[in-house]
Amino acid sequence: MMKLTILSENNAIPPFDAEHGLSMLLEYGGKKLLFDTGAGSVLPGNSEKMNIDLSSVDGVILSHGHRDHTGGLVHVPPATVWHSPGITDPHYSHHPGKPVRTLTMPENCMEHLGKCQCCTVHNFTEIMPGIFLTGPIPRISGEDCGGPFYTDQQGTVKDFISNEQALLLQEGVLIQGCCHAGIINTLEYCRKIHPEIRVHTIIGGLHLLLASEERLKQTAEYLKQSGIETLYLLHCTGDNAVAYLKKSLPEIKIQTPCVDGIPILLNGM
Image (cartoon, rainbow, N blue to C red; front, side, top):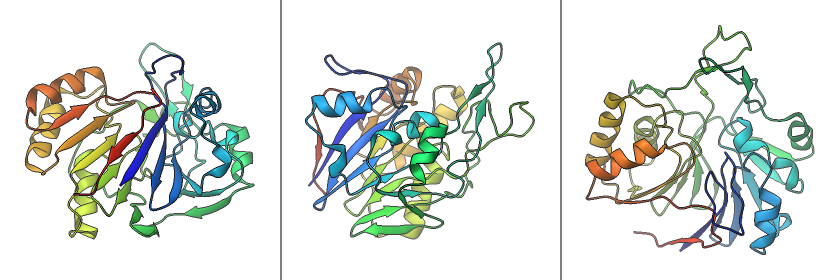
């Protein structure tokens, strides 16, 4: 049995607060792991309202370095932090007609990271019994993961967010941050390394907000034949993508949870 509580997300039900970010508390195998920390504005308040003590977590997993996933780190007492290489590298977005926006981990969180016990995940790694981190995910499917992302303010060097990682549970649950690597790449990598684990549930963002019709079709067709039974779609998946997937995949149970204080309970299958 695992329990997953959403602490930060784009949508929330009062008295909880929303933000553009993602943070989830995973309780599994007697351990408490914080998966991402949100943008930083709602993690302390939502946790307090849920009677969740952030000082009691056994560690923090950062999916990637964007500030909407790392900005709340400063609110977590120094702990073990698992991240892939380059977690503090610079990231910027250049949306047409809008000012350049920094997506880099905030400086105060970088300073706080220096007080933590950091474990850099270079390859697929079992960090606790039955809990695996992918490390950087090979990009082999040709998925257009989308987004006007760059590693410089001038917008001359494309940023593929190549260090994003996902979390895989022995029971067949895959947990995502934004899925910049693409869900096809991510799931195929998990199957290549651990073919004995049948992934039946995916939780997190699928980064399809700006996806083309072709990309949505590619994703839906893959998920249809993948054996996935349940999707909990969050954060940067995009309302258009959620609607498309629900229409295209009636055989898959698709839910869009939010910050509501009610944990997601899952049994292994």
